[in-house]
Image (cartoon, rainbow, N blue to C red; front, side):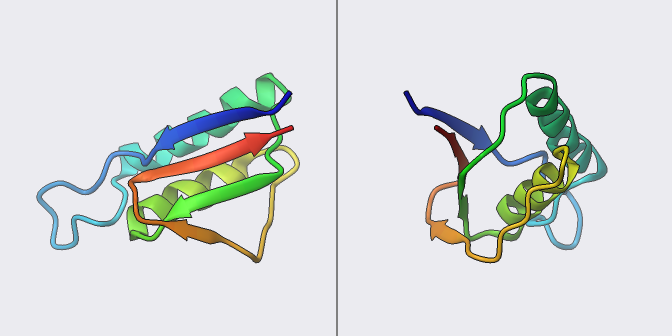
Length: 88
């Protein structure tokens, strides 16, 4: 059975020049998500990510923190504000 994880982007940079970047807390949130996945041996086989910068920064920080890191060169983009990580 496949599992689908719907993940909202980390905290954006409210009040900064470019709101569409993650804040320091947002980057920490993405790393903590990956640590949660590591502890439960959750490894994605497909990643679908929104097209905004904060979506992609959340995806990149999370996937780089997985053990071992998850690298992909092909990203599908969706218009919603959620990333989707699937494991079968």
